[in-house]
Length: 98
Image 1 (cartoon, helix red, strand yellow):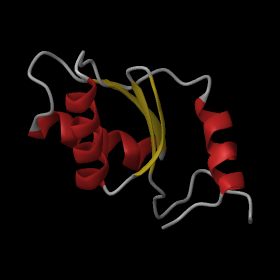
Image 2 (image 1 turned 30 degrees about the vertical axis):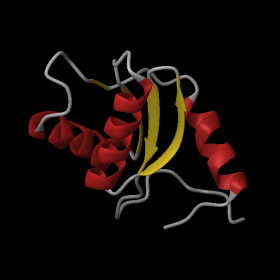
Image 3 (image 1 turned 60 degrees about the horizontal axis):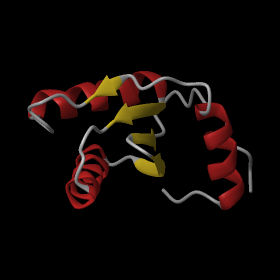
């Protein structure tokens, strides 16, 4: 699924007041963390994840792995916070047409 710029901006606006629902701990990206992110995406469609890594390259690899494994759309990364969107069958969020 690809989103238009207008749809991305709409989702970013919805995500602005949200707090991160998943935070990577000292063990990094584990199967349990991925399962929790997937659960949260299925429940909310739009979530934030806090990726606490001091190394930029490591953080980029973690973000890419999360996006790849959850099949979600990366909307943005600001600081240590990653914003993800994944449409579910129920479509809780109604996107603008174009």
